[in-house]
Length: 290
Length: 265
Image 1 (cartoon, each protein chain N blue to C red):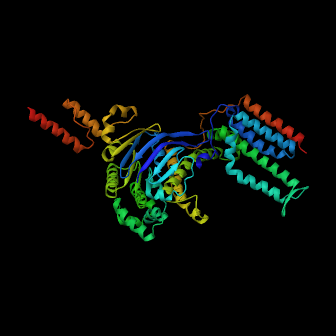
Image 2 (spheres, each protein chain N blue to C red; image 1 turned 90 degrees about the horizontal axis):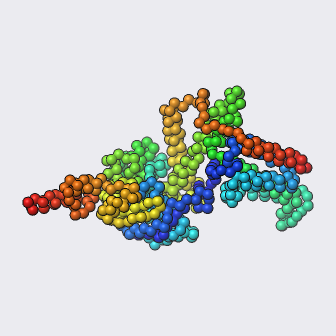
Image 3 (cartoon, helix red, strand yellow; image 1 turned 135 degrees about the vertical axis):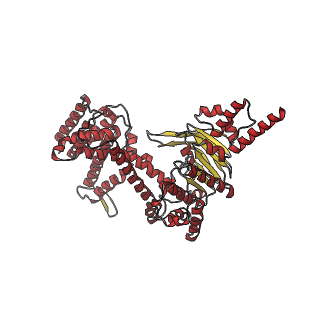
């Protein structure tokens, strides 16, 4: 499902002395089945923008296209439920949204709100609990007896159970241990590929953006200032620095190697494998010339 | 929705009222609450209204913003007004609508009570809008200090109040976040029959309570770790200062009170 923001501005506390704009004229088009990362500093408007993707916030100016639906400033938006089923949001620290007596019931909460039968919802829960890496017995436990990391996984399963076409992730791995982070991010990537999802990842992590995203948008002070492929974005270290953002570790490592070898590699490498291959190609060529 | 609530909000500014000492403002408001009941005819209510408008002017808070903040209590206002209109049966009948008879005295009482209500809400709102929650508790603690002799745990009460005030915005933010998370999972708080709406509150309240208790525990630990052990021998970083503004404010209120006593029936 395509998502398109056109000239979207958003102000908090409209019409009070606390009125404050968080987004200014944001244009952003996310074609179906894209893995789009949105990067920016704290306060850059990332979290505000993501709430527009399923109509939780209505733009103060401009339009949001979600599939066929248009949410427009100044017009009443009715019947947002179908949109919310299609666009699942995993909020920051989603474990705070757990409330049911058992994990099973909590995972079933989302789908049953959208009219899925109890049997079907339970079936989904049993599949998903394994997918997020927890044993099936967990389903009968109280979510409040689980560890923080396990709760996070249950909450993610609860969003996936709605069977969304678009999944929006707001810092889904914040506060997890490194292994947990990798597992969760890999799981989302596999899902993205297998189910043909449109994935929107809001993150601080340059590494995650470089590794998974097809396109990266950079937010700065409420504006969308850049949008391109990871190669395009990370080739321009100067611009990134202007927005107080760093290059991913691997690109910084490549710069060090380039300094050591006293020559530039032909492209920006975003994974260890890519970089190793590129370096060995250059070395082989060098040996051939000798 | 939450953003529109003005209760407990503080708008920093440099007006006359802002610069007053929290103690004098508290005394002022408490005295005013009593004084309001002196009014009992057109002149005295007009005086009350004028005085309130004057204070609003001095506080530099925009009137429309105060009125906006009145929205949550408007139902109560309309309700008390209607009670008087419908149930007071004195004086002449002003007009009649079917079996409904509106009496002169009813209308008069309805309007008076509404003004009383309005004036009280405005004054108390001005107190919270012009005084930061911390100064309010500081002021209250000092004012209540004499009661310590009667074994009233004044410091603890003030602390409880400041913690409660401090966490209002935090809990509001939290409510907003959880509400959005549950809305994203298809729960609908604002539509459907009442039964469904009440049911939809559970997914909101449970996480809210869980996090509030967790916060309370964290706060208690943090305080203990930093050696907090009550108000005994504790000094203050913020010193309260009484100046000419405070005296002026209270003198003005005293003048209004005397006028009210003189003008009432």
